[in-house]
Length: 261
Image 1 (cartoon, helix red, strand yellow):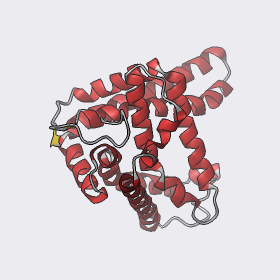
Image 2 (tube, one colour):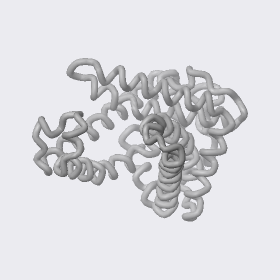
Image 3 (tube, helix red, strand yellow):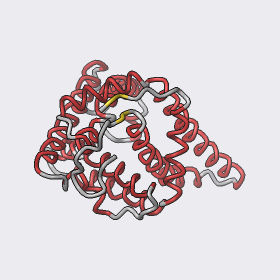
Image 4 (cartoon, rainbow, N blue to C red):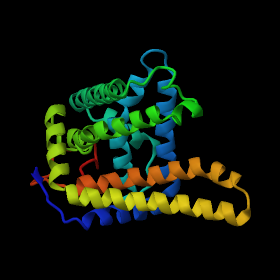
């Protein structure tokens, strides 16, 4: 496996490919994303360990959505079973994915704890009420958390795909993912800016429609579903960031038929 350095403009191409592929199978890809979100929400409701479980499935779900993108790219309808591809690849890779999930959950919990400690957010301020979330201290905590989460994101960006499709160990996959992201930082920056522009455009469109109809309630009603839809499109584009960042000299042994990247 060899790292592939791509030009900055490739980041825009990743966004275009994600949107194009999503348009080929919008119902299937959106449905799979919503299934993942539903599963994560239900897991988060489990007492004591709910949040950890919801975070631990993120790498496996990311891999599942990438596998669904591959299916859609080939003109096939991604079935719901593709979402659990990480759990159907044999014991060794299943174990590796579970370890990766626990590492991700631990990293996210550490980020949240550190952000709260640095900003000194009190339990009452960290509640989910709209009033508490609007306090400057809580918003500062969110900003600090986002900054602290950035290296975690880079570590786990390609890790699920490396573990599943190339049989890389969890720890090595984190290292390779970080190196690949840093070496292709310009392309990822363009990728992020392009998706920011897409989100801004959708938000602006909602605002214009609300103003034109004289009904501000439209914005409040449409914001959540459209936000989830854009996030589903974003998840579709993740596969291309992995595909173009690594070159395998020879096809790795596929965990399941048709599962090579």
